[in-house]
Length: 345
Figure 1 (cartoon, rainbow, N blue to C red):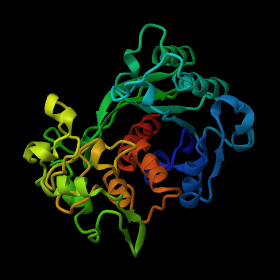
Figure 2 (cartoon, one colour; figure 1 turned 180 degrees about the vertical axis):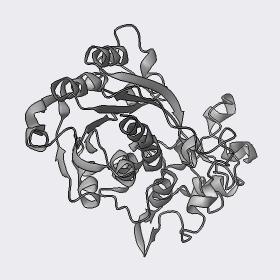
Figure 3 (tube, helix red, strand yellow; figure 1 turned 120 degrees about the horizontal axis):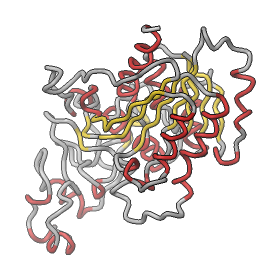
Figure 4 (cartoon, rainbow, N blue to C red; figure 1 turned 180 degrees about the horizontal axis):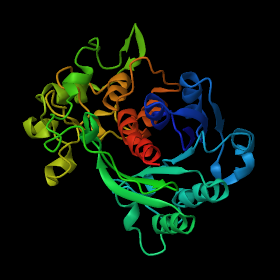
């Protein structure tokens, strides 16, 4: 199976599908720094830093036309930026150009009719009104002869040590398709993966420090006040443990958003990682016991990237890439659905 990864970011989907045994052929993303990371880790793949809105469908001709589709079916992945539909985005706008990226991805599907399609986005995109991006996309799939299934997928049910939920759609022109069985959790009879399993053995570093043996094991600096705050926060705890003088004024009047400034728990999955996953003030991203936020490497591990994976750009650039990525282990497990269709033929 040959994979064309649209909105590839730093390569989470590609990595998972490659680990499942697929051949990654092409990647497209409009973030040149993310594509730089992609090229470091996938030097053999034709990867392009370009806006899909100004990219012609025919760009894929040299990679597709000479191939035997019966022997090498195609999978188009489209994991478009989720911020326009995220419930965490307080500045949503109907004019946000990112809301139209699914329709741009549709152009490529209608032109090439790949045997398989996968999209990933935030829960909620499917609820955006009649005639919205998701409804238009599924109508296109139906008219183009695809069977499809979509669901809210909890990443921790596929072994990812993180409470991350995403809407995933799988489509096939070769027969009906469905999601694989969960591998972790009560239904699977196997405990969820935990923070401890994935990051506890990494070298200890301080806030603002970079590990000498791994430049991606880097933690953001903390102010003296935030250092005092995290020192007052126990493992798995939150600002509820702080003395009065450490509380922000907004916290004194608002009891919600308790994850902000919180520490992770060793024995549980992490909170859902975001593009600010290395910032103490943006979620439950405090290290369980060291007085700092997660390092970039720790965040990548909790997304199930291997420790050999390298990231490019500033610390903020790299955190954005990690937070936006599809967890490779989740993509690898979901790949079973496509193989199952082929095996049934």
